[in-house]
Length: 384
Image 1 (cartoon, rainbow, N blue to C red):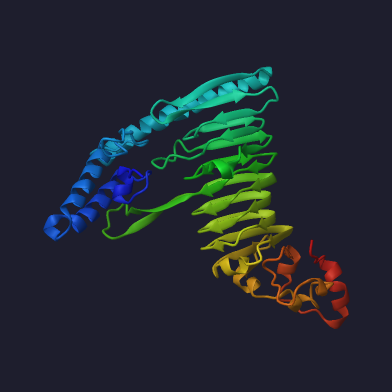
Image 2: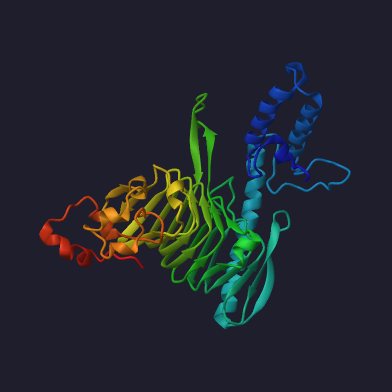
């Protein structure tokens, strides 16, 4: 496998010019021959750094053609910002034209196909189908697109890391947003992109945000701030179906169906269904009144972090850690009728058990003998 210049420096492709420079300096101290390092490795690191400064993604080799990086690098941060602003403005204008083109076809109920985008960052193909849906093929990099109908996507979606001005925003006023076989094709949404569907469902693959440190704008040495690009997906009147969510993501919907959740993810919905075994690192479930949560993975109890919490619409907070060790049989007299249908050691988390909003809201209450008989029917606790 051929290493890119980013791989050699141990950084990601979205790294800023400063991050590239800092990575080089760190490795130079480690591998320079004057420091007892390996001279051959230092030369490789120096060449990768020099290549990235002029926009080369891969090193020169006999077998590897040079490929330009998707984000310009330069000698100064001001130069980087200027060039990338030009690219962002180019894409933003192109997507505005694409939005107007698709809208015109929609109004006249006609079909059409056209390429949009940037020769530097790549083009995407838009096709308005006879059924009114819009097909997008290619990676959506920046800019806004509003469409009055469904969108079917073959490609990934990202948002520029160098500016919020040209943030990726896709808005459907009606219809569904769907990836074509997202798991098989490894399509993803990342880096602060936004997808909003007013009246429809969203079916996608992996969703990632981005969070990184930047130096203090006031120049204080050793002081950093956290820069956050939170990816936002919304289907308030429908469902969101996704695979893995990680690193600064917010989902809002009536129903959310996901596999795994990790590192500062917020889920806000009436009904939330987990089919994987992870819910970790400062993640939050915001459950709406009358809603429910279900964990279907039997061993999901092992992958739940102690800092993950559930927030009820009335403001009450419950640690998920407290639920993952609470056995259903211990709730029988208070909440759950027909407790014999559950295994002796079955916990609230896992086994597809329905954890209702009412159950969480009243979890600490101890009913009197007079209330015991009517408690379950009043709160509607059941296994579905």
